Image (cartoon, rainbow, N blue to C red; front, side, top):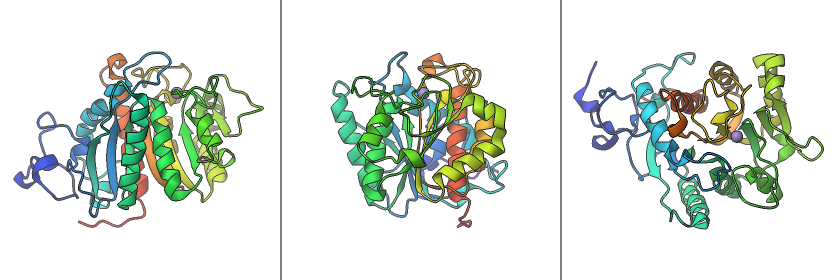
Length: 319
Ligand SMILES: [Mn+2]
């Protein structure tokens, strides 16, 4: 099973396809053992870490999210066929680990500028982006870069919080979607928030909200149908705050709220979204300092894998 050709794949091989057969417990942990590269020729998706938690309101630590997710993803990098999908997304899509956004850590504005500029640069090459946060604020510069290319986007937003409160016009990890609507880069009426279980203003929130109790009451199929109805064929950006999951499944996060979705519910919903025209994704708010047995990072890595399967679903195997 082990092939020397596949060893040190992240650095030693330029082959962008196939699974890794390297020892799971050795080597350097790039995302899913993909080639670590900023060379974007023929790359379908660049995975980018945004190690920033300067905008958190409660417990910090999501700056270590990208490295925790990469490390957890190694355990999934050798699978030949994904459970449920029955194909290998890495035989269909060329995916590289692009590394992390570099910014001045004492300068939040610099993070915003560098993230937006770097993501824009990747999109300009014709590659798509999968971002690993970071606190949820990082989604704002990432979505700005996408909206520059695609226009106003539908947001498919998994979260315990709506993140649409202006908080007195501040910029933080709970207000960025207020700003995204104000800036016209997200179309709220064509966007859906799933798993919400904190206060929000029903009169002013223009997003379609499927609260956690609604999902629990109505079930997976109804949730999928509602997401499809709202988003239809719009271009959609998927943002997954890991605190959408119940703290039983994702304790390693900054602002946990009980009563959330199970990992199984989230995976089942994701797997039903093949008809959505996703153009980008992030998974945010993984804070490994509060994690137990890395379960939060494993959940985040699995969710990124489901997204890659959604993207690969309609493609045929290249290798
Ligand atoms: Mn949240």
